[in-house]
Length: 589
Image 1 (cartoon, helix red, strand yellow):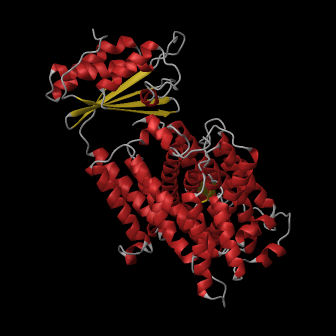
Image 2 (cartoon, rainbow, N blue to C red):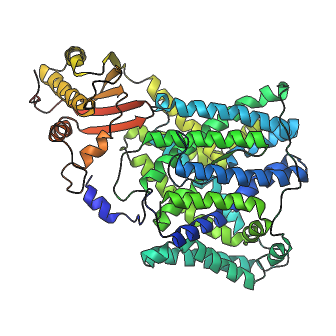
Image 3 (tube, rainbow, N blue to C red):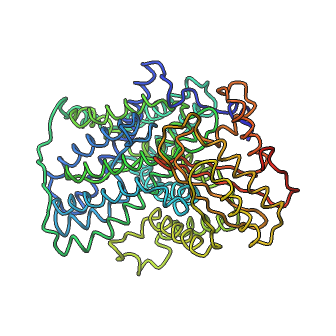
């Protein structure tokens, strides 16, 4: 990849660690909050009314959901310890939990729902801590498929919103209002100068609301009737610790939906990194772990407060790409606005009064961008026929279940209609196919040693044995050894005399005429993949001469290098083509 060309083509105006002007930060954060808070409230209302909960619970649930969404959005942006991604990832109530939460409310009330959410949130913390163990299952192909299916799942809702008008209003008013929203938003996003492009969302929604107001679609009476400040009339619903039959019957469904939500969060946290930097970077999986942990924290707080669980909102990525502003400070403003909404009914009324055709039109633009982002995520590591089948079959299974086209009579009652959600059904299919590929893949050979140059003879013996079993000659073994040696030389920290002894796991397997080597260790060093990409770039941070030699040699020996950094674990995957004439490392013994 030509990083200079990529940098020139980037539309990012402010990177994640940059600070835009204060007015721009506040303005953009508020407009994102305005456009998102309606979804936070709507999910709670759907669950409450469908589950037969009281109006008191609805009032409390909306208050708690807004406050928790704001708090966790801020944590996602600033990262507290190992919790949070460090990127603009809006948090809000999760549509994936609608079916199971309705079932919990119907069978045991808000207290049972709260207990199930608390227990399932602990599973999410476990996923975050052990995410590296699932790296071969929760792949970019799976995450990208789930993100594409988010558009498939939500787009019908957006289409339905285009036609919603108060009784007695002509249907043409909805069409004109929606078209005005889409045209203004697209016109600014496609042709306006970059500074004006930042305001495309709010200008588009404002234009649509003005047109809707002309037709009488904007509910100004709701805004006028709302109070400026206030606390909810409802009260905390408590938790149910009886762990009766209803709890055990619903727990598997809650755990599964939590897993699906985690896959969505993984996809979002990978995708937001792709649109937050001018120069392409390797995915930082420590940020992904932080995002999943923050998601778990949000669900834990939701359970303790007795409201619907939350998740990352994928619209964060589309808005970031649309505006070109990825600064973490925008996430802080969005979170603060959510918290304020919980205590300012007037502000909430302004958002809820936006006509449905306006919200639907804008949502269509965002979901279209989100679909393309999912495609890019699928393609980021290349795609072969196996990945193509996983993505294609998983995607169309999701589309089929979402539209009740696949065995509707059998699926409608299964687990409370869980598989009628396209993201859940398609994501599960992609996970199962990836798991099948992993189980049936060729046997992997592995060895353990100290993470030290003294282990090189043991590594050489292991790789020579591996090459011999594949029928490769000594030249192939030399090439594998050279790639491994240069990787170790690039990774072992300098001035490391006082560090604790560490272990290295080396895993090797064959893919066609190539060998795939996986080195697993805790290095504490910078990302090797990024360093190789920046070789020869005058603007890159100066690299010690010996390290640069190792990186250049590694780039020569390996056809691809991927470095996944997790907390306490680094995984470097090398693909080495053994067919070229072998070249020995200058350092080879």
